[in-house]
Image (cartoon, rainbow, N blue to C red; front, top):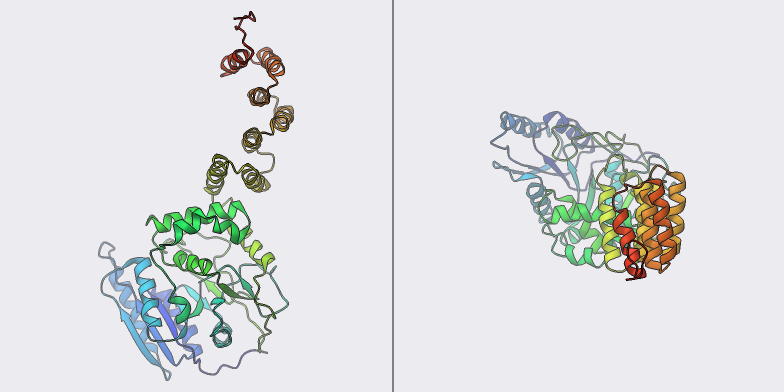
Amino acid sequence: MQAAREPLRTPVLFLLFNRPELTRRVFAAIRAARPARLFVAADGPRPEKPGEAALCAEARAILAQVDWDCQVQTLLRQENLGCKKAVAQAIDWFFAQVEEGIVLEDDCLPGPDFFPFCQELLERFRHDTRVMLVSGNNFQFGQGPQDHSYYFSRHPHVWGWATWRRAWALYDPDMAGWPKFRDEGRLFDLFGRRVSQAYWTRIMDETHDGRFSTWDYQWMLTCWAEGGLGLIPRENLVANLGFDPRATHTTAPTGYADLPAGGLDFPLDHPPFPIPDAAADRRTEFTRLLFAEVDWLPAATLDLIFSLRDQGRHDQALAALAELLEHFPGDLELTRTRGGLLVAAGRHMEAVGLFQELFAVHPDHPDILLNACDALRHAGHLDEALALCREIRGLAPHLTDLDRKEGQILDALGRTPAGNPR
């Protein structure tokens, strides 16, 4: 049964900028919900962008179409603050005047069930500080939990969302706690995967350092640092229409672009326990960490792996590399890296076996056997290492580094290159 379409009691904040055609579509959805209080905040045009002032004015003109019983308050800026300050300060302004409310950006088109969903859960969890937000988004692509109307999650999705003043009061736009959170490994504690840790570390580092200007990753960090939970609907309730070159960040389409808004049955069926659904969150992680789209992620993960190795955390480094190999099974260089980590961990003969197996698969890479020589030398198997070097010389006499590797072994044996005692 669908929710009755009575006027919405919950205040709504509508964030505008320079896309009047999208603004019209989202405003139409708000108009259908008929909120009793509507707050509208708009960033100002950028002087270096010809024609943007006219687009901003056209978007703001839509306010004249408010034709229901509604208290409208506006924050219409003449100067441009940018995505980070304009949105964060607008939400500050909103929650200075209301205890709870819904936040919609101009490219987030809600389906009709989004509003009663948020309203009911804002009321239900008003005083439950474990819950930090209500989201209109579901990125499970039909594979998520179906037992109840929503589930608890560690992921605070904000393409159409709602929260309380009590939660937003914890927001820190400067991310002062990020370095400590990062260095104590809290991302791994949250997600249990080094690939996820590498992904979020890079994004949070860039946001904290000002290389990436936004407002929402700071909110995400706030939720994580507070141990806060998000409420995720069983079906996606908001479509993001903003994947186009005019967007600030979502300039290229992804699997999330225009994900259609579905519906829910009312009254809502509430899950009995406020525990994050680990399987659903893991699925979200996998869909978000698509290596084909996030092409820097393997390098970021390797940086983390080498950092773990340098700290002497060899088992953790090997486990992180195993995660990476899940996505790139059989990759030559990653497998060689695993051999190097085994040597660093003192598992020399295991590394020798790995390098020998790898050479059997890649006989056109005799340099792999040099890695086996190193592992034998570190294990103290010097005669075997020397014999392997001489085998390599028969295969590839001009191989780079062969002379140096053989010299290291001979030095360890106390022999001259000619084989005579010193």
